[in-house]
Image 1 (cartoon, rainbow, N blue to C red):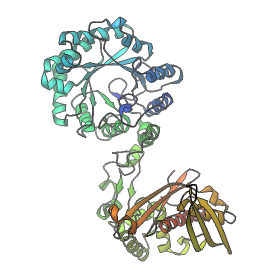
Image 2 (image 1 turned 60 degrees about the vertical axis):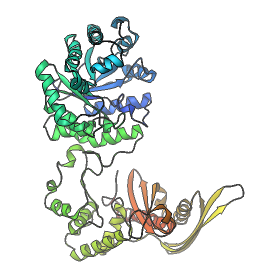
Image 3 (image 1 turned 90 degrees about the vertical axis):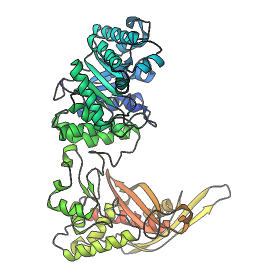
Length: 553
């Protein structure tokens, strides 16, 4: 069962990390959590050490009602308290008999967050009541829930806009809740229009005037939700509401992982268990998978590009000391530094990348210079090694030579691909490959739903009797980009005579690697990427162990 206080968090009750992914985050366009999804999200957040998990709005949403019913039986939270979200009683009613308020009790959640309008314009125009009744709605509902043994947080909706318009009303609303027994007055930037300095000043003023415990809830409509949340904490807020990966309505909410990253690494606040901080990157990506949204590669702290360095000048400094161009050690948040090799790369970039891939270039200046020249030449022709570490590793090993040299597991004699548009409208591709493998000439033909699929099938058919490990390799992703001869995106009207770049992602036993091919013909570009994928696998088979950083678990 859930706990009434976040006893498992390092700061106990002195500071709250409050997650609202399952309600506010679920309002993002394109997200639709099932009840099973919501339970999985809650477990991940609890494992990470979040103090409060807002599960949704029971009574208003049937799915949320079911979630709380199942959570009472199925969740065994170690760190977090489960929170039910809802509104105050209706105008002119009584909290004890209001169905919505009763649904909050029936959820069995030990904590309830009530939303209340604190902007006089919303009270008069949206609620169609007056400030006196709005304050009484808050007071009555909070007092009733506290009397029933629930801990109550008050979300003061539109607080900052309301405070700017009529500060007395905004303070009166939160005062009614706090006097009735609410623990925290959460100041909400509901429209997301605040900037850090002004928001922090308001937070500080409210705390000085009232002495209340204050929380912060920020939307991201000015791209300032994270900055506003951190500024509010610096101004005295001790309760911060966020969503995983910044999911939420419109532009989203304050990103839980960026806020935690800043509080832990910049302000020195131990808001999560020490062992949970290195889990930030993993949990962020796991939650993205549940939401069925691709992880944001450029997300602060946890994105795959958060500590990726492309410029040669950066790499030169990183070679001396990684801290010179990293604001923290990425390992702290479970991430990793990457050096990207492109036409912007210098010797230091390539040497560092070689070390990452398991290829020692430090004592081989000729190989390093030749590899750098080759990379720059290929990049100018449209090749891109940023996302194709496996192809880059093969290139570097070829330049080093000797024991590092790569041996392709087969030799191509020729291949042919034809398109068969049949009378019934079905379109099928057929490929024939002729290769030399293990001292034998082999011919194989296969069909596929496209030319690349057919070519891959034919190649596998030819090789599998001689290279049984071929069946372990699965092509999991295939990306095509049309380029100009100089390697940049080309206008659509010139696409038919443009250079094509293909990225192929392969996997075996949970390891992934990416290869690249570039040619004026999309089939040939695909063939080059496919050959690199199998060559990389063959190299690992010969060595008996995974090699290089081109592999990702």
